[in-house]
Amino acid sequence: MPSPALKPGRRPVPKSRPSRGGVWGLIESIAALVFPTGETSPMLEASIYIIFCVLTGLCGIDRRIGFFGTFLLALITTPFVVLPVLLLTGPSRRAEWHRRN
Image (cartoon, rainbow, N blue to C red):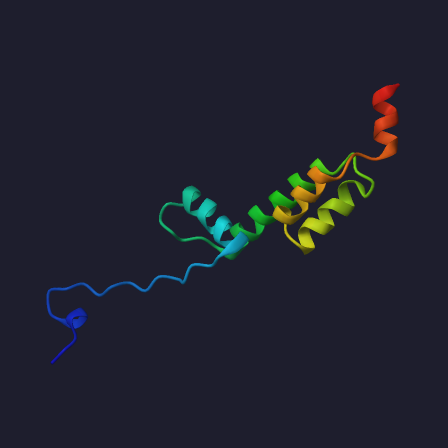
């Protein structure tokens, strides 16, 4: 007896990609909003990830490690780990001195 998916008159069920969790799952969700067909490329996902890393680097300009240090740290770990660390740490002494004068 043939399986129900192979009966005449039924369309085959398309196989979908398994969903990923964590940061990549979030990036896939954002990409799905941009491209509602569900077709996303790894290049688009990597671009969105790098944009998040750049935004995290911009948040770290007034910190001791600066933009590039924060950007590289976000690139190696993940922006969602680095952002809370930036919020918990204070600005560098140089930035504080410039704000006072």
